[in-house]
Length: 99
Image (cartoon, rainbow, N blue to C red):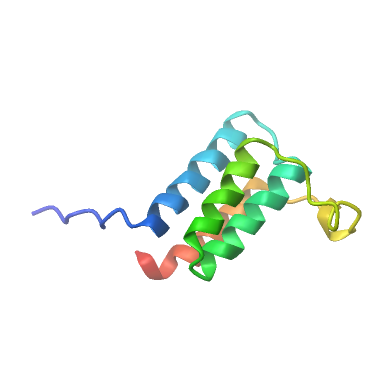
């Protein structure tokens, strides 16, 4: 007997959206640029604390490669390179309790 897949909650739908975006970047054989990385990390942080609406907005900014907010554009941490693997690991950690 097969097990029914988990219900598609807003949280899971966002996780799939992030995963899909990261797989696209990976297929392109590149790492996220600084704008994408910032907005994806923002989406992950908001997803972790249950702010699904805000997480979705952050993903929309990542997908559109929106400019960085002025207050973070000059921060050293914003320039730190982040890999697809690191973001996938962070997503897996956030979603591990939903499995």
